[in-house]
Image (cartoon, rainbow, N blue to C red; front, side, top):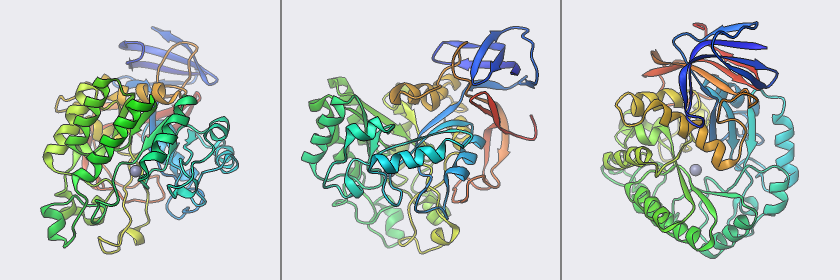
Length: 421
Ligand SMILES: [Zn+2]
């Protein structure tokens, strides 16, 4: 048993927003209400108690790149960030493109403190040529299908993938950057790229591929997630496609709604990621898309790299930054505090919607339901110093943010607790 006392329970899925107690038994919520009793008790006075956060886009680098992250260190980072479920991308080494490889990861993930789901590759070896066996991979437990990191350029192959995945009622997640139009990855084409002597990745390298895939989604009826959307035209395109009836969802990362390309000048490779940080009008469009519901998912694209790798010259360093341990605070600091989203809307995009769209456990708090939750102080400010992740490539290092995770409970067990709680 575990009693969580006197917190502000905030669950957009059920419409609950009020101070009450929760009594957990095993991995389920047994009771919610006033003046409950039980031992041990966790005092949540002044804290928000929300369904555990769910990140549908992380890279735990395991197997293949375990000097950057492992299933274990990734799980620690997730718990510290308030996440109780994550979906790992398939660009492991070897690529997660067979049921055997997928099941091997899921088997090892079972002993971790948070729920680790795994995406399966769309094409064998992420080569963009031959489709994987979607039915077998879904049967083996694939949470979704994605070649994330490697955009699929063959339009007919994308159409075929959508047709097959639609027939299985699966989810196809797409990284949208046309490689033929990307001059140099990781920095937006424009004045900042020019300063570095690079051509950069133009906004239309993303928006043109989003346009193609929105129209293919409309034609095939497939459920598609546009990953880490970063451009104004891309957001407009998703809004338009949905108005036509396409089953298109979009993710935004915390970095794309909080930073612009100018951050590259200050932070160098810590601000290098794909797609890159864009112009201010793009950042504002991503925030608008979040506010009006065009963008239903906030996902971090948690992408650990070692200090040695990120110390290389900008053009040689790998793209990607950490996300799990700062995501909630970046959301509160840049979306909730300025009034773009309510706290409830933020939780919707970080828990309710990911659970619904991907069919995952959690995402709501109700008696008899899953005991996955996060306790956080919505107003506490803190300085980002150090990570549970194996890597530390975060542009938010040494920055002050608002909103602090105090405890994370997964399967009814406290898997992270800050000193202050
Ligand atoms: Zn990606």
